[in-house]
Amino acid sequence: MALELDLLAELRAALVEEELTSDLREDLAALAVSTDTPGVYLWVFVSFTNRYFSWARGNHQHPVNDVAGAARRIATHVRGLHLLGGGEAGDGS
Image (tube, rainbow, N blue to C red; front, side):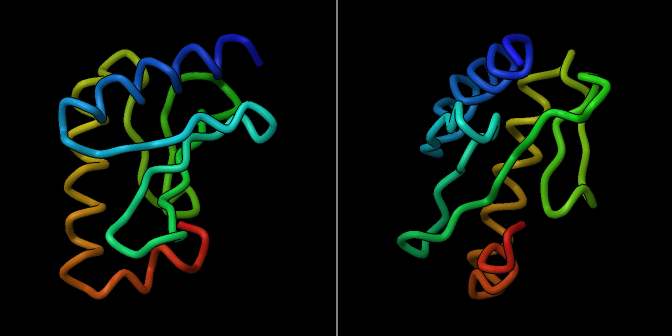
């Protein structure tokens, strides 16, 4: 689990560059990325193989060896939720 948490911490730092806030949840080995809706998060995990970041119920993945690229994709996803009214994030995405 240490590797997963390290990868998520790197991603959290990269998300700051994308002007997104997030909270590393060590108990869940997950990153809770804030959305425009208070209390609603986009949850990001590391795959079982430790090769991909995964979000939106695993429908979206990005290689962990491209943290900046993953942060850009996640930021695009979160901004898209804003345009959609945030409904998808509330479903545990």
